[in-house]
Image (cartoon, rainbow, N blue to C red; front, side, top):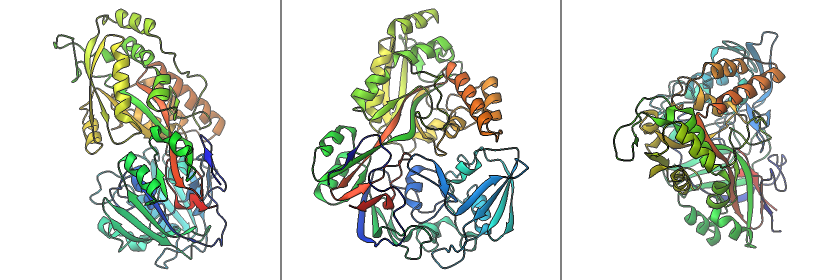
Length: 519
């Protein structure tokens, strides 16, 4: 049966595939980005988590639209004290080496996540809002998490935290997880082999506590080039590929030997701006002389926002496989608000605003983007450069591989740069906190707003869901009125699979082996 979907949550069966289902043989997956480690807590980046979730479960799982449901935790709820959450764990679960899973392992994982020896970055960003005072182990299957203030998003944040064994991990170096000698999780697949930059191989865990693994063996190959991934799929070298190049989607949909599935992604693509420094590193007058940073002027930021035509980006650059936006998450996700509209491209008004700000003749600016991280990232940068030229801004585009790019960004080396952030919690605050919060290393423009900080912090400390939603919406409205960033779109992620496989596309962009099954 030929199956194709665009912007739908699931094809055929969902993530739950039925306990006791007979395993198929080998599934080979082509992924665009290699992980930096097999250690599940070494670095909080999607390319790592996408792979290690096959070996290591989390307390709370997310479905294809990022709605939480029980994983290693059966229940989670605030106590009478809103600063204390009680989490009850699933009984009868064992790690791959036979050690029993319990509350001490969760407490250990929460500690280790913030301090992995030698890690280039940790899970501190994902847990940045979780100001945990202590983790109290009540008994083997119960723990209480004490936060320094009410925190309604604790469960969603914990959905990103892989659980490792205290017995195995205490005092262990990351190399043991990376080479497989310590790679024992509770997940549906067991670690078999990792060849850095080439592939990772896993085998089914026959004793898995949940739905049975669909595949006896899973091979994840790292194929950076989009055309090469497509060629590997068509040649039968892989069964599945993630991130089908937008230019190839229609052709694969027409191919009777291929199934294509797409989902709205939680990843926001936006442009971060230096709105703070008096003189920006990459802006000059058109004659090359120094000028005060124009991006500090709201009118210039407003002009840029309405000079960028999101419809052109979506339809021409992304081939229709993106969702235009002026906020953080797509409609249907927590934190989306109808009060922040997508601006119409308006060059007349944009030129007037530039003139009112004293930049009627424009200026020169260098913009920076990756060329191997996001879908069509370099092409997006060229399109934005052409759009800004129409309001007098002469743009030089500099693109570079992702390796080292964000180290430079955190050092504030860029003035106007493309950034992508995924809503790892399934709602807007997990983007807003790193991108806009005061003092965040990922607030690349060092934007500050007392009113935003007040509303956003209040939202993050309000357990009542209605009041939390109201405060979050108000903080979004306040932020976007000041144009601290220029969002353009949420990505749409597409998978290709050989004929005979059904699939469940996930909005978090992760490729799960159990989301593919023989028809």
